[in-house]
Length: 187
Image 1 (cartoon, rainbow, N blue to C red):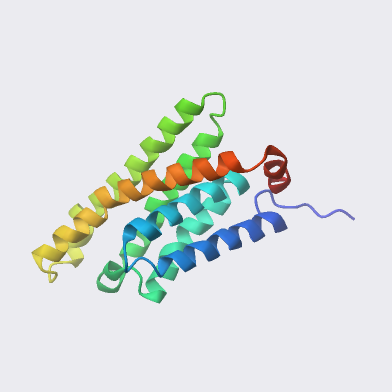
Image 2: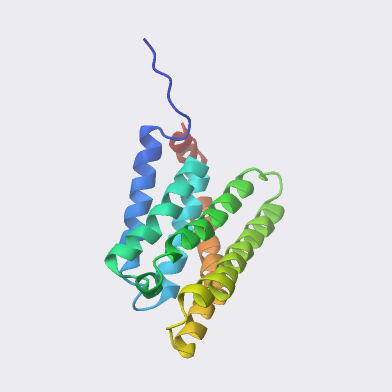
């Protein structure tokens, strides 16, 4: 008797998602050195997961990376405002959706790249807006203004820069993977 397999959650998908998540975990430890090391790698892993295994894989990494960052203490704002977790998850998911849209526009590489850059901007705008207009005014009243300013920067322009670097990394890596291997991954 044949069992029906749920699309998006094959053994290969789970394995690939796990490998990319492991890469994210390793790079979370570099966040204390610079968000420009960990951020681009996490964003690239979200994008590559979506390219290779579909939107569910990108969403899983989008959700799990901030949770892991919280438990290893890699993101200081999460210790001050734990409710940032779902905000970061949604921001990451916006980038995963952008990667999924990219895969649906294979006819024009330039158009696909522009769309992905737009989604990077949407991620940064969403995170920046949530930090500036919701999280800090409601939950960050005890945080000194200098730290609030740093948080606003971290969740706006820094997010945009790291997302754009992550896009460049993911497209370069994806272009280097032979078509035959891409086909095997997606089987």
